[in-house]
Image (cartoon, rainbow, N blue to C red; front, side, top):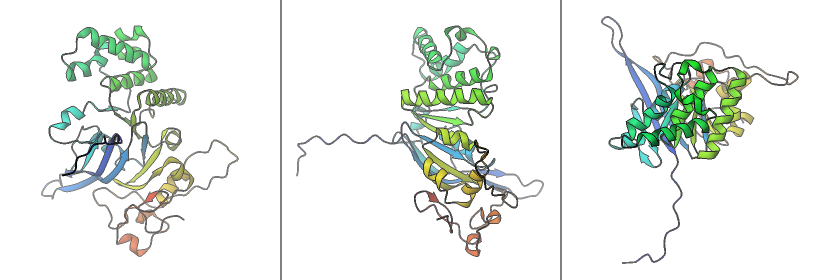
Amino acid sequence: MSVQTQAPAQAEAAPALVARNLSRWYEVKGGFLGKPRTVKALSEASFTLHAGETLAVVGESGCGKSTLARLVAMIEPPTGGTFEIGGVKAQGEALKRLRTDVQIVFQDPYGSLNPRQRIGSILEEPLLINRPDMPKAERERRARETLALTGLRPEHYDRYPHMFSGGQRQRIAVARALMLDPKVLVLDEPVSALDLSVQSQILNLLIDLQERLNLAYLFISHDLSVVKHMADKVAVMYLGRPVEIGTRDAVFAAPRHPYTRALLSATPKADPRQKRNRIRLEGELPSPLNVPPGCPFAPRCWKAQPICRQERPELSGAPTLAACHFPEA
């Protein structure tokens, strides 16, 4: 028997979030005497997110972005697949503990706060539920510190949500998400309901918090200009499936999937003199109740060949992973 005499090198920290083939399907009633049908809202989503990184998930409405956010935030269970938080699989008895490691900031800063509660009570509530033994004075101290961390003033502690602007309310929502010291923040369109000037303030706040606290962000957005400012990695979704995944620079500089090219071509340019070649997609987005065989993008793709309508392509290639039989060079 051999005996190890030298201490092993320190193991590399586990990724903040690892998703493997996450899927979420819903059964829809078929009406009178009709058979139930299945909506495949999300299928086989896999990715890895490390501490201090931002993964942006982009795509058209109905592509599965918010469904993915709800699964990662453990609001809904996945139909298939698994995911891990800090190396611990999110299932069974571990779920209750892991829920404190993942927090979500919702899109609507007006509907996500209870209008009958003071801000102090809103911030202390996660501690009251998850750490009931914490003294009241400690909860209040933590709440006031987090208010200051998110750019709010001490007097805001005793005010009600209706007394704040949209940007201030979103700061409060971010502060509430930070109360349990999470490892991962799920940001579901966190600035889309705000004015442009306020958007930049919230985005800069999120960047500053990530640098201070080493947070991992799952950033859901349809605004590619915001994604380019925030993301380290980008996952492009289409009809519930990832069709391209890569670093931000690789995806924006040389997209390999035709759908990604079409999305980027629709992004407004800051310089009016810069030439813009808009790609206009033909046809309608297929129904998630009736996903076409083969590549789901084939009915709208200008590069589609017979094989595209018969076989579904897998994510492969470099510098980005693209699910396409004929990716861009």
